[in-house]
Image: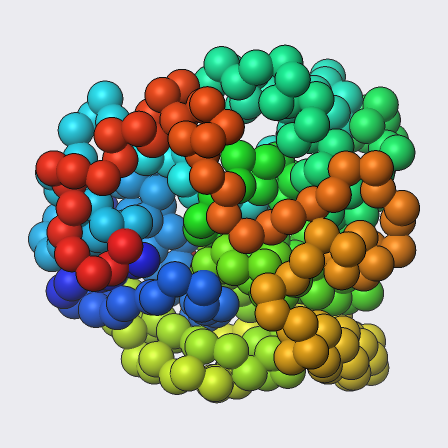
Amino acid sequence: MIRFENVTKRYRGTKRPALSGVDFEIQRGEFVFLVGASGSGKSSCLRLILREDVPTSGRVAVLGRDLRSLANRKVPYFRRNIGSVFQDFRLLPSKTVFQNVAFTLQVTGSSRGFISQAVPEALALVGLAGKEKRMPHELSGGEQQRVAIARALVNRPQLLLADEPTGNLDPATSVDIMQLLARINAGGTTVVMATHEAAFVDQMQRRVIELKHGEMVRDETHGGYGDRSMIPRLVPEQERGAAATAALSAVQEVQRETETLEPLTAERIAEMNRTPSTHPIVLPEVDVAELGVADRLGLADAAGEDEVGPTS
Ligand code: ADP
Ligand code: MG
């Protein structure tokens, strides 16, 4: 699904490369933490995956496409397969919750019928049913991040990239967001999350790729956070401990849910959200062609000249 082959990224006017000889492969359905101190290259990695930037040398392949040979005019279509969330939410302040989630669908020409179904489904999935008409400033930080996640998921992307998504949130709210990302992953979406949150990484026991000064120093299938010396201590120890305990129980709950049920059904998700939903939500992949939007989303010709092999 994502392959980095000996990737080096050097920004103009800088001495040291931001990424140096980075090599990894991420399979469909994985949950991967990208960890490392500030400046270690996490965001650079995510930007290369999104093709917001290109490597100085080496090769990046995402969703079966070699990004070197991806024509510029195809980049917007390629990005529609990828959802992104950021530390600072990036909502449109003068638009309602509904309009924020609907915005990209409108820009890309989705039908009104599709939008009126997909937006409430995405909002229900993140636990915000009934808040469609709120403005971003009327929401808590955690709720704003949920809107951003709904917006990232409304197109049913195969891949979700999250760059420090809990960085602006308090520990308890961070646990909620973490739990939501774990559920999204349990539904089949590949999740790559850059973070400093040692507690979550330790408790989740998912794959960890660690960067240090742009070099990959660790790739562990069930890792913890590792070297903590560089982690900023923004939260008092006591609260950190509480967050870790809460994270553990949240993650154990998600693990129990996913063990007993595979794949996640609409009923199950509705039950987990504890919000009665009139629109059943089905997370696993949608046949885009069947929805009749393949052309508009640029997916009709997705398979073809850009294929690079089994990473898709
Ligand atoms: P992280 O997300 O882990 O904090 P980044 O990928 O943002 O790390 O940055 C890695 C290194 O690249 C840092 O030294 C940073 O200063 C540098 N860098 C990032 N973006 C740019 C840019 N656009 N121009 C120059 N240097 C950059
Ligand atoms: Mg960063």
